[in-house]
Length: 342
Image 1 (tube, rainbow, N blue to C red):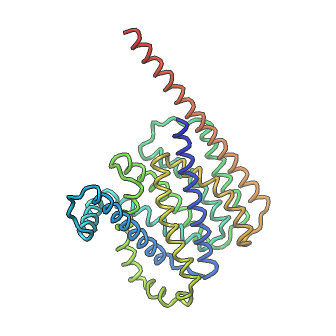
Image 2: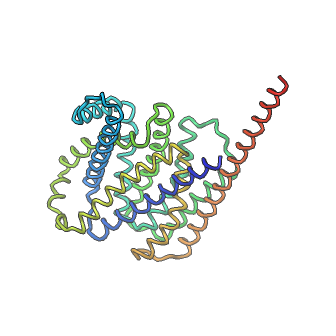
Image 3: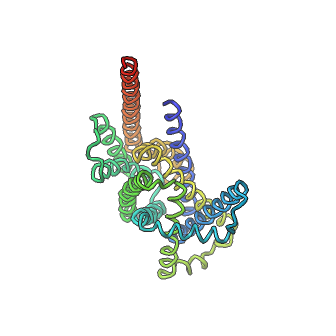
């Protein structure tokens, strides 16, 4: 049981690290280079995803080929076979790809428009949307404790209070972020469902989702002429820009992998909770790094309230784990007693 708890905490920490690096590298790209072409950034990220996943499949195949010397499948045949296999799974992953793709676009666009502290403050309302989605999409029978409801209220209200005194006239950024939260909650639920019903691994989900999104993003970038404006971008051939651009795409891959892994091993609520704890530290760091917002009473009180809510939630989940562990021990003892009597 302790190993399971350690594994759950570890995957949450990996997710938090990838999420933090991704947010800061993306904000750096938007702020320093004034790059706001979200469609091209997502297209580049999905391209990186497909390349990495395909290389992994090739390496895995070569390893299996050495173990099974009778295998005569070429690498080209393997790539074609894998691609056809992913296409067959489109019907299963298309709803997920639609919610993820739309949510990712809204999230990146929102991040480019508003400061990181405000972005993270409103992003913490994700746990509220996860709470609603879990109830509406098949989790109606789950037991919801009073402490759990209080923790969600604390986290959500704290997020709103933190950004209360900093809202500017860019309403579009805030609307897009709320849409991102709603779609993120749905995609987390769908990812967990695909793992439980179809045995999708985090890697399979990243790979198949990228294959689904790549042609759509390419068509959108051509129709909207985003691809043309990208090649005309003044900083395109600067080494610093390309390094920053590639870093965002790479950590987009690692973030997706970590998100699905955390969701499948734990739950969407674990993702939402990790978001809140990570965002508290990210907010403080962003104030020091970007200096685009100054801490005040609302921001401080809101972050503190969110932290209290996160603590209550963590305590509640730990008590549930201990209760289940105790019930499991009691059940095992009863089974042993039955066997002894027999």
